[in-house]
Every structure is written in structure tokens, then in C-alpha cells.
Image (cartoon, rainbow, N blue to C red; front, side):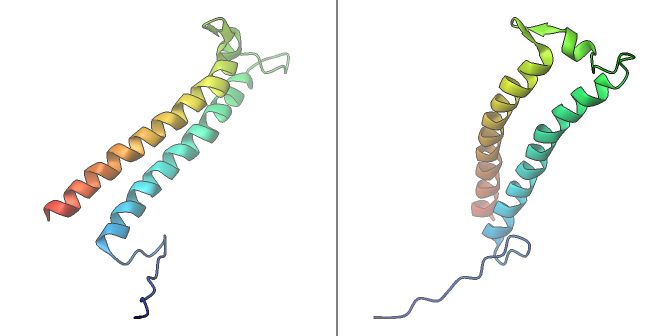
Length: 104
């Protein structure tokens, strides 16, 4: 029985073309995930800073979408749908990178 050689995998220093392609896709998705996770709450917070009463009211908290306050909908449903779309986007990007790898 032959001993299998270990493969060195490092996210920050990928060694093969396939690893480089996958980490570039993953890095793109991580940046988009960060913007989705922190961008929407920060946007809501920034919009509420101009409230003279200090309650954080803004057009985002006063607007309604599908019967819910817009800020609630953006955080509860919008982010959830955003994560699902990120998964789909990951598949699209990975498929495109994989196709490029196999053509060259």
C-alpha cells in the first residue's frame, strides 16, 4: 500500500490554479457578505442620527414595505434573501472560474 502525499492548503497563499480561482471567488463573496451584514445596519443607524429627539427615527424607520417597517424588513427578510443570493452568486462565479480553468 502506498502512502498518499499530503496537500498543503492555505487560503492566503493558494498553491495551484484551482485553489487560486476558488479563493478569489471566496474572497469576493466574503467582502459582499461583510457589506450586507454590516452595511445595512450601519445605513439604518446613520439615517437615524439626524433625529432631533434622539430616538433614531428616519425615513427608513417610518417607511413601510409589505406591511412591515422598512428597517425591520431590510434586516429580517432582506439580509436573509441576500445570503441566499450570495450562495447563488458564489455558484455562478465558481462555475465561470471553473470554465476558464478548463479552457486554458
